[in-house]
Image 1 (cartoon, rainbow, N blue to C red):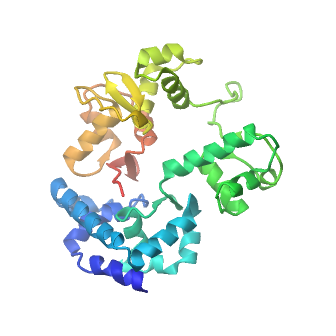
Image 2: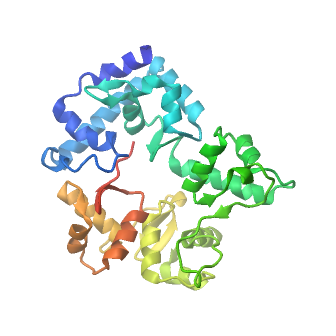
Image 3: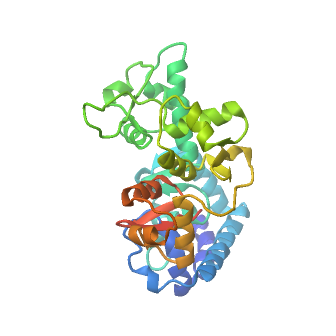
Length: 335
């Protein structure tokens, strides 16, 4: 296949030492892939240079407009906005062909360094998961606002989701919605939201999340707001510390002054002064160490005290970190 031949022009020159650095991103979806790697990795600055150089080389081949670029466009058109990775590999078995010996498949290179699509937990998304999830929520909202009730299956098909009923149920579950195969084919105005496991006495109807409420308040205000101001304006009561950590972990927001948040879409300069959230400080500790850190190592390195469970929740909530082993975290690499 000409497209794979083009890709191998780049990948055939990868040395073992370079692969040691690249594999952190190549296998970013496999939690158990990195337990061994700490002693083999180059220094952080060398690793960053190797990853950047490899990314540039892969994307330069894609930019030529040749067979690889044409294949990439075909793949993106088929995936958009989301598709199970297994089905993608079944349609295009060449994606599973090794392009770096002995077992680095082409899809890993195209996803992690080519930016052709994004892969996570068995799904492929175009252009990325944040967009695919946002599109899903738009369809769910449209169901409730439509002039005529339609089936969720019709609504998603009309908006470009080419998923089977089984796949759509799984994808909606990934996005926080619970629906049966029968309900997919029934006209309806709403989907069930998944709820946290709470006792029957405390169970209640869940509306928008706290971060959704903050996004709405900021959009209405049109200016950054201090955390205390946000808490006063919210319809429900929330604890200050957990909300602060959730806002710092959510890519929709940027902290522009101490405890003051804006929407990321406003493109304001982030605050770089002293302090910072537990998540930001954890990222700094991991980058300084040049290796993944266990939850207890991160907690011991933080200047401000935080409960173990509180720190775990903050680290699990952010998309800037990835869990690479039980209670062990590393910085998520883009690509």
